[in-house]
Length: 219
Image (cartoon, rainbow, N blue to C red; front, side):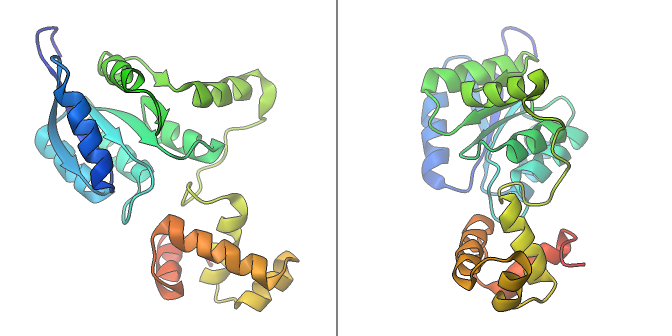
């Protein structure tokens, strides 16, 4: 990308209001333009291949293909494109999953507008950029706050316990059996399942099982 060129951005988020806000923000800039939008990971991959943007602003939690998998696919198929994650998730698993997938930056939703625009420009210029909270997590890891980068796990938006419950659901266990296996109450199991359905945006247990088994859980 030469200096006179405008930075070409693809916006990926399943919330229309979020896309509208980012589009309005970018429209106020003289050196950045929106060249496409997508509401899920599959759409992000298609638009990235068609538009060949300089930067993809990527949400992580979306229906269908999530932002981590979409990031991985875009980095492989459109290597000149950089991915800036903009999400509500700031847990270690989400951060490191995005980094392993090839993201060049990671911001938390709620970041100031100037922080977002600065990040877009920095990522387009080939730099790595992280919001303050994420940067502290990375520094903690490299200074001994963690002993290893979390292994690649499906559904990084889930907590370790929620993924454990989902694994047991996919294995065909009923709530009572899950509670007994994990030594927790059935109400706690129900609460975990409600959180899993919300985060994965699935309507029922059958859909959750399909998603989980596609990801290798329940074996």
